[in-house]
Length: 267
Image (cartoon, rainbow, N blue to C red; front, side, top):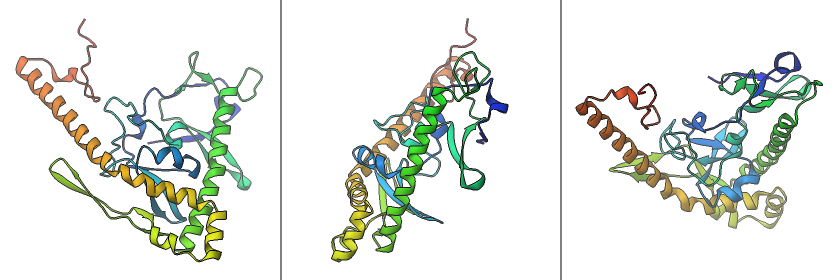
């Protein structure tokens, strides 16, 4: 489980952090929340939807057909797509609410990326100032948070004018049909029928680029079915290798969780 701790001189002045070498931490994310600024890039590579949360609607990238399964992740932790969502690029950092409405930069100390050194990036310099690498992360997350607030305001205007409708999805993956529930899309009919005054409000809130990006991204929905088939085929091939190994008297423990063969201990 993630354990986010505010970064402080007292706790982290002599610590280092490592940059992730894989995206295995995102393996169970079938959707991930987005900010509006990244929708134009995402719209060209994967489906975008909206989900309803207690605070309102938020845009998400649709990454899988089943809960806890990210189809854009290879078994060895590599990211398959050509664009990586902002929420994953900031791992293992995040901003959290602190006292007096301030936000604190936090680090997931259960990520396996906290180090005593000497490899990695320092949290603080010898003079006790935040290192440039840490400041770069803070700048990235601060910019993302500003855009999240802008995105939330745009979604609130969309909800006000009833521009969301359920996105009913049924995809064929292999021999089975997968139904995705709980996703919403832009109601294109309602958008086109907005009266002039409402259209001005929608345009000023930055809704139109978000809406068109979501509608455009829907063409990528069949990609999820193809990715699901590819994952199933990879698992089938790995299973065949294990059976062959068992017949040949090879220890099945040589196969790691990322479905490759480990040669550790053979020397």
